[in-house]
Amino acid sequence: MKKQKQPHRKTGRSPAGDAAVKAAVARQADAAASPATSDSSTESAAQRFRAGVRTRAFQAAFLVFLAGVLTVAASLAIPHDFAFFELGYLFTLSIYDLVLAMLGLSVAIGMAERRGDVIAMATAFLGVIAPMLLFFDPIFSAILQSPLGHELFLIAPIAVMLSGVVLWLPGRIRRYAAPIAAAVVGFSFSLFIGLDDFGIGIQEFALAAVLGALWILAIPGLVLRPFRGAWLTIPARIIGSWLMVIAVIVTVSLYVPLAPDAPPLADPSLPDGGVTLDAPGLPPLDPAIEDGLMEAPEQFGTPPADDGAMPAPEFGDNPLLGGGRDTKP
Image (cartoon, rainbow, N blue to C red; front, side):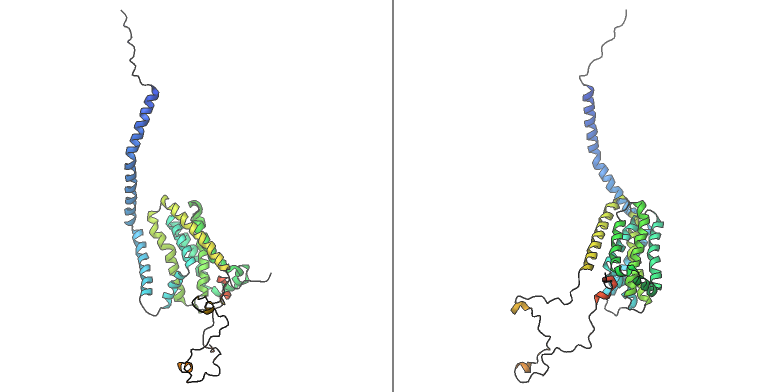
C-alpha cells in the first residue's frame, strides 16, 4: 500500500507577521545596545585623552607653555624696572589682533596631519620676519614708495582674516594655505616691531618679541596635536568665524576718524550741563586771593605755558593706523 503524504500543519502566522516580529526584536536589541555603545565611546575618548597626556610631545609642549605663562605673570606681578627683553615679549602680547591671528594658526598646527606641515608654517613665519628685521630701513622705504605703502593699515586685518579662512579650509588645501597665512602674519608683525623698537634697533627687544610670537604661534598647537581628530573640525570653524568677524571690526575701526578735540562730557549736576567750551585753563587760585588779602596777578586769566610738556602724539602719521595715505585723487 502507498503511504499518503500527511499535509503540513499551518501555524497561523503569515510571512509579513514574521517580518514584523523580527523588526521588533531588532529594535529592542538596538535599544538595549545603544547605552553600551555610548558608554564605550565615552570610555574610548577618555582613553585617548589619557594616552595623549602620557606622550612626551604633550608633556614637553605643556612645560614650555607653563614656563611662558609663569614668565609673563612674574614680569607683571613683581615690581621692578623692565628690561628690554621683557618689553619685547610684553609688546607682542599687546598687539591683540595679531595675537588672535597667531592663535588661529596655532589651531591649524594642532590640526596638521603631518609634522612637515608644522615646520612649513613656522619656517614661513620666521622666514619673513628675519629679513624684515635685519634690513628693515631699506625694505620699509621701498614699501612706502610702492602702492602698498598707502594701505599698510590693512595688513593686520588681512592677517587676521587669512588665519580665520585657513580654519575653514579642508585639510588638503589647508596644508598649502596655512604657510601663506603665516607669512602674512609674520610680515605684519615685523612691521610693528620695526616701527616700535624705539628707533634704535634694540636687539634684545626684537629677539624677545619674536620668541614671544613664536611661542604664541606654536606652543598651543603642539599641546593640542596629541588629541587631534575629527572632533576638532567644528570648534576650529567656530574660531575661524570669530577671527573673520574680528578682522571686519578692526578694518571698520581703522576708518573711524579720531576726534582729539571732542568736547568734554556733560555733567547734569553743574550749570549749563557742565560744558563750557570757551573757559580758559586757569591756574589754581590762592586762598589769600579768594579772601581778598592779596591782589590777583596781572596775567591771572592767561593759561600757563606748557613748554616742557611732551607734545600729543599724531596718530595720523603712523601708516599702520591709517596715516600716511595719499589723499590726492
